Image (cartoon, rainbow, N blue to C red):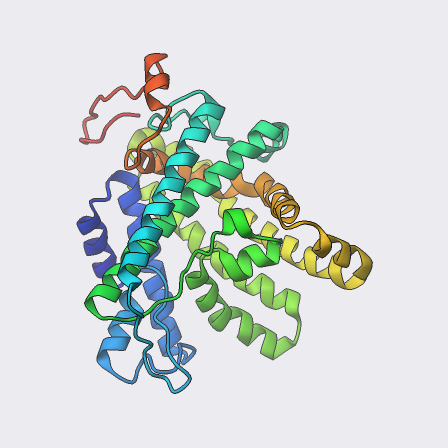
Length: 348
């Protein structure tokens, strides 16, 4: 039941290949957690008061409908649809810029899949930690953040147009405004997932134990589990010639999210145990804090992106957006073959 609406949404959006399968998996997982929230009575007050808010809550592909203090649905202000369309355009522009920079850094078209560029082992990741590779990691994360933001903005725009419901922005420019690891995960990256993980896992664990690091680990572990299940879903859906590359990178999602839980705890501990150092970090100019945050998170980026890249997801994404350097790269001979395999998929 959780996959019916996501399947129709991705078909209407014209998503293709692995991007279609990944989107269906993501939206189905979000729907599952929303049903779980209703079952465990952790959903926002007002969701179950009437049928329409309930359907909107469980089927909204991105964002979360907002409720007032008296549990009534917040109606969207004038200009919301235009704001969502503009947000989707800006996010799409960010994807185009990220694609172009990645093609310049890697010297190959983003529309081709070169598994030699996707690290297979942790030692490969450590050996490749140059400034150039950190930049590749950063803009690859920008690519996926932009894709997620486009989908969420369009979904929120449709709900605002059809139902008149207001929704919270799920992505708050995490790649360009985050001023710390906790700011990145707690306030900016995918607020939709953050909210139901907090209500379902962080709050119950913290209320039961009063141990913040354990509650943080519980939330990140839940996120790691459903992301790892998504990778398993990608293994099943990937073409035969790509399946082995994804299978070799299973477990990376767990390692990534556990590492982020450690970073969040380390940042809080540093601020608590060494207050002068914490005050010094907060007094740094805003651009310096953003760059420092990127340098802390970027080395771990391949743990998250490698399984997705190996499945061909980034290639499917690249085919949806233009690149300002693609013409020059194709002129140099770096282009997709355009061949079609026996299963009807384009060969990369």
